[in-house]
Length: 165
Image (cartoon, rainbow, N blue to C red; front, side, top):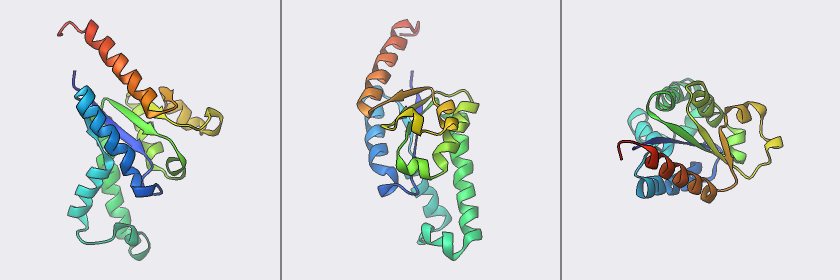
């Protein structure tokens, strides 16, 4: 069964907008599991090229707040539809930048509301994670390797009980 995974985590305050872990996870999901991913970095790049070509999006936040809000609203709408309609599950990387921003919290809230599992990778002790975030999370992992082992095991278990295989 081909699944679609939303890759949630800090962008606005993350080094490289959180691109490194997403690119690695996206490649692993595709190559190892044959799953699709929604990578907000790639999607934002594509959308921003169309919505504000040649402009520094981050500069608009101070230079033209109304334009910035209009563009961000379109990104939010797009990402919410992705979580609600197209994705089967969310992988959330919870670290300092995710805690500081708002998008990650919104994405996992959408996933919770629409009954999608949220698998969180974090080194934070649960006592240091906001209660709302804990309530949105299905399962916690201390590393991406631990998450990958879980996804492999559950994929293999699901395949062995799937009458289509």
